[in-house]
Length: 160
Image (tube, rainbow, N blue to C red; front, side, top):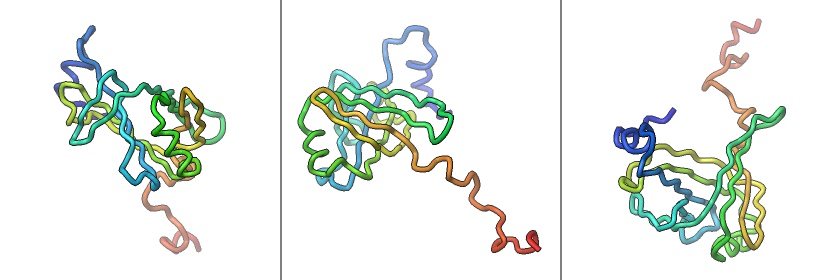
């Protein structure tokens, strides 16, 4: 659970009806983005957070399901309102190695990131209306849960 700021708790998380909502920021990174990451916010007006301008753009994130096999994946769908995304996808041959950092801020305190998460963007599909892709961690089920595991090389006395 993220450690939200007291300002966020007071204005957004705890009130029954709040005048302020959190703004979700996306930072799309990939090696072929020579001008830096693509930065968008899910709002009706641009927002500057920590010196970076996030362009107002509609997008939707669908939370991951609990699959029977494999790693859970979320889905990201971004409105294709400019040709910026299409030009990047075409120039990078489908944008392999893309990561997306998702952040939550309040419009009144945009430099305080309440929580963030970085995931890989895979299986990107684009049409005239939207650019969609899956958000996933690479081989999450194959990752070790601990930094060290007992093996014959590390603990030969256990294997004898």
